[in-house]
Length: 271
Image (cartoon, rainbow, N blue to C red):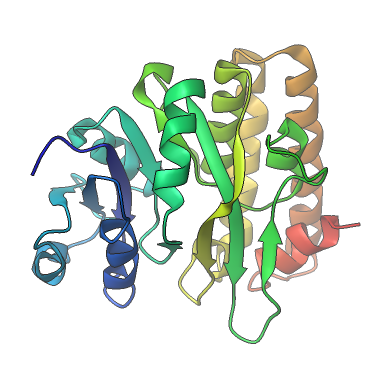
C-alpha cells in the first residue's frame, strides 16, 4: 500500500462486539488511503478479528498498552506514536465513520490543522441527537466544544504537536480546546458525520461514570491555569466544568451512583 493519507487512531477495550463495524467504516472510506492503528487496552487479539477486512482496503497497525485498563488517552497516545501519516483521525471502537467523512475533512485539516463534522448520537430506544454548531456555521465555536456535552472527534495534523491529556474523563474535550486555541479556527462540515454509539459498556453509561467524571473534572480544574489558552477560554472551561462537577457531586450525595452521566450532567445542562 502507498503511504497513508490518514492514520485512524482506535483504542480498544472489551470491543470484540463492535470493533469490526468501526474498522470497516474507516477502511471503507473512499478516495483516501487509510492506515488503521488499533491499540488494545486489554488482552484481546484484535488482529485476528480485523485482518479479514484488509484486502485492497488499507493498512492495519497493532499495538498494546503495557498494562490492561491503562485508559483511552494512553492507548490513543501510544497508537499515535505508531501512526505513519501526517493527518490523524480519531475513532472509538464502538463508533463509526459515515461514508466520505475523511475525504471531506482531510483538505481542511491539512489547511487549518484541524476539522470535524456532525456527531450523531445513536442510543437504543432514544431519539437520535445530532451535535453541530448552534449558529449553523461552518466553524465549531469554543462554546460549542465546551457547552454541548457531546464529543466532536477531530481530524488533525501532526504539526499541531498535540496529543490526548491523560485525564479520567473529558480528555476529548480538552484536546479539542487545545486544538481550537492552537489552530485559531475549527472548520466544520455537517455532512462528515461521526456515528456515536451509546451502549451499556461506554464510560458515560457505566455504573462508575459519576465517580470517574468527578475525578476527571477535578483534574481539569487543577490544570486550567497551566494551559496555554487565552484568559476568556480559561474562564469558559472553568465555568462549564465547575457546573458539571456540582451536578455530579449533588447526584453522588443523593446516592445516585449508578445513574447515567448523561441524565445528571448533559441533559440537565440543556436549555
